[in-house]
Picture 1: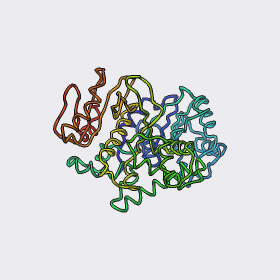
Picture 2 (picture 1 turned 135 degrees about the horizontal axis):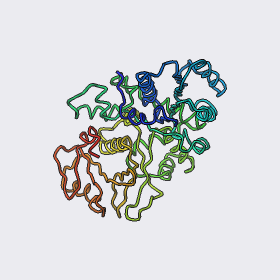
Picture 3 (picture 1 turned 90 degrees about the vertical axis):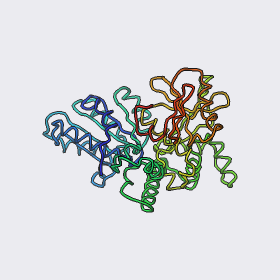
Picture 4 (picture 1 turned 135 degrees about the vertical axis):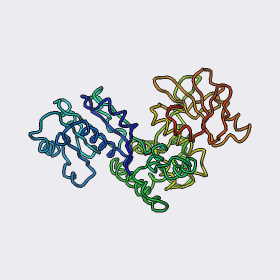
Amino acid sequence: MIIKREEYIDKIKPFMDKHIIKVLIGIRRSGKSTILKQIIDSLIDDGIPPENIVWINFELSDYFELNTIEKLEEFISSKVEGVEGKIYLFFDEIQVVPKWEKLINSYFAKGGYDIYITGSNSKLLSGEFASYLSGRYVELNIYPFSFKEYLKYHEVSQDFKQYFYKYLDDGGMPSTFDYEGDNRKLIIRDLYNSIVLKDIIQRNNVQNADLLDRIMRFVMYNIGQPFSANKIHNRLKQDMVNVSVNTIYNYLRFFENACLIYQAKREDLKGKKILKHDEKYYLCDLGFRQSIIGNNQRDITRAMENMVYMELLRRGYEITIGKVDSLEVDFVCRKQSRPIYIQVSYLLASEETIEREFKPLKNINDNYPKYVITMDEADMSHDGIEHLNLIDFLLDDENI
């Protein structure tokens, strides 16, 4: 079943048919190709002739030979020869073509082209190309399915809690939804291995795949926990693994570039500055963690924190980890510089837990919104701090 990812289509619509390059960035198999096809369907529904549309997926064998910008330009010319009116160009996973930036810039400069590109590397628009086209492109991050999209795919309108725990283990990679049990686990693991091989090892010429795997497993075990490359270095040293801190930083950056993990920096809320150590990392999708190391439900507070972080990214927030004296605020989220503060916990099962989760928020001396998100169904809001049920938060885009 294919569902329309309306949230992303709505974000792209204001830029369709405008002289600006549309760039979709996201992890491999997160649904970027499907979104491109839905945009194409929308254009055709609006009366654009199919012959004015050129779509190329560089991961399909039909297009393997288009491995230079000269061959690619020749192919496009053959497709649009004699066609009148604006040409719509869709390039899926374009980063495999060397010097693709020059060709895209050429089409943009000519005018008469509406250009859409996707890539599975967060640094697709880094360096010279980003500087050259400053202000001429709009970038949209594509993430795995949200819980709401997951329910829509499975046509679920009740028993949300049961499906929440299923989503907690399954994750939201749409290419895995047609499989169950051990078959699903195998498909997710194969997808993970493909991402590591194609988007990390091959692209960055990584020589030590075993070390890469060790570092990724460390990150998976420690999602939502502050740590540094030095801590990973010390842990590997205990296992008699000799590696420099700089190499560890590089490998973490490779995982980030492949959109597999996200880094959240720590912020001193009283000193109003970003701290340069003990960042937190979150996985793009918990299905990978369940497939590789398991334990999502046993480590449910960490898994919930990861889920909330990814949902906040989907909603367009910039996120840091807050520090108030010796206390920590899980998430400081901003849109247009307006902050909100969020704590995440499994259950507020005791007065001690309630005090622990609410106290950091009480110590923030401003009047911006403050929330505690848990699996409790009873509302425990107090002192101006709103308490939300996690499932309600995931299903209602308007509550935060």
